[in-house]
Length: 166
Image (tube, rainbow, N blue to C red; front, side, top):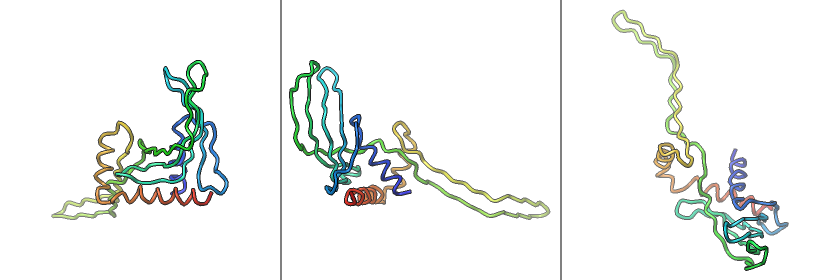
């Protein structure tokens, strides 16, 4: 489950219309080919090299470098970046967080000749965090107030371990 979550988050760094993703052999990084059209300016073509993940102010960030060329709308090169440092916040992560899980067995109540039999109850309440889900986002934030970003920190550690294995 953790590996699926890590891979899903790793896929989120592909925010620049990726052409390809590959591990740079022995470099502990992931290189993503990118093409980004900037309206009324031109097109940036290059690569994003992700070297680590960090949690900063409660937000998971991909850290690395970006290289490439910006061409104007006529196709002429107007600028070049070479290994420019970049930090990309991975926001808009969605998911659910448990709020309440209540499980009771069968309840038998007998009071002055009145018999009440209640079947087992399974009540599970989860909040769905996603852009636009105001109540879900609020409840997930409240549910994790005392976590000190433990969940994001664990995800960052896991993603860095994956990068180290490349």
